[in-house]
Length: 270
Ligand SMILES: [Zn+2]
Image (cartoon, rainbow, N blue to C red; front, side):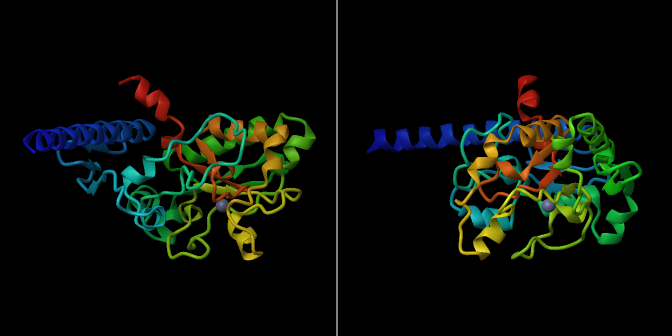
């Protein structure tokens, strides 16, 4: 009995130090993606903003189901699913949704607590793939507007078939809940952009679901699409994730989330 108790205690200790290493790596990656915006207080397991606002970072919660964590995501949850930089060879596995976990308190603190507050930080960004003089609104916080501008300039240099994918921007800022939920969409913060990609069917898992399909009806044929791949890679090089790498896919959706793209680099410097 004593041996077993000791073994159990050892296991608990090993698990908790693993969790702490996991938390500090995740926190380091988050801080590195938003330099100077906040710091991590490891002893308190909180991030601290310059005005002394403190936010719990969170820790693994294996007891909660995926959908429950999604509904009340902590910063730890937000960092917990690695975003794959490589082009997928097959549809994302169940609950592989890197970026769908969002800590609302964090995003509100960063980009604005109300529609009016977010709007104060929006700027017009030229979007040359849609034609000369075309603009979209995007947040200036974290220079996300500059990043989007770089994406547009790079894609505008590609051939017309590739450019055409993103020639019809279909919404950036929009203070609204995510369809079917009461959580705010990332579009509320001015950090997301959608496109009308006409030839991609079933662009959004929820639409497919409404027609009787499931998230598993991922349109795998798009993974053969080299033009789309070029576009996604340019977005990723500039701090954006793509909703096509989610099991609950959203093929038209790109979102400025540098913390999910710099993870490996941030960890390398440890
Ligand atoms: Zn979207």
